Length: 260
Image 1 (tube, rainbow, N blue to C red):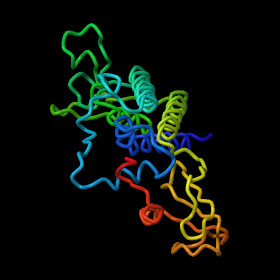
Image 2: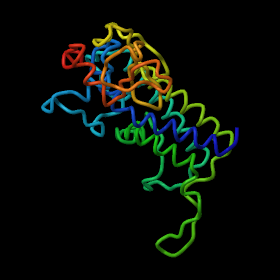
Image 3: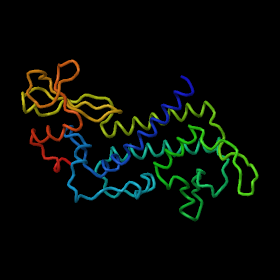
Image 4: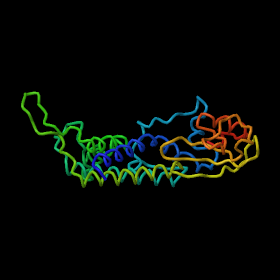
């Protein structure tokens, strides 16, 4: 594998984790979802007055009490992902970090003996988003050029260039973490039969998910199905894309609010 491809795959995985993290936090506070309707749709169709989750206000899962989580499997997955990325940041920092204390770009190690709780948890207290962005910066070799200080003196760069073996370790860890998040949310590559038939032709409906695209549903009725959605490229199935799913759910008579 080339260096450039390893960088691309690592950054893509880190950004996918960040994009889905809010969904994972919501899932912890929701009972395990049925196959239907898709978890993401139940959240996007909540009433406007429902309480909204502010991701930035949530403490890291590994540092927070969970008195009554509704989905322990998702909570365990979230904790595991945080540990993977926090430990990865520690490893990279130990190898390439040159930034002095007080530099906002610096990754601070946890110190279990510190009296100040902020120092006890180090940069882990900033949460997963910060860890992902920090690791991405190291993978992209940001801030690796000498810098001129306020006194005009050129000093050493805040970070060294990431060695290839650590890039590949970052890639491996980020992809494992991404897979764990997607699997916990049911967004890994899979095809799952919907437990109710198509309301237009009674054909078999299938929920299709993939890591890099929204959920969609297909009906095996194909041309014989009168559903008001297009056929797939092979004209073998009707396809409800993400934007069409609310109409399908309404036609099936599913109570989305109750499902959420």
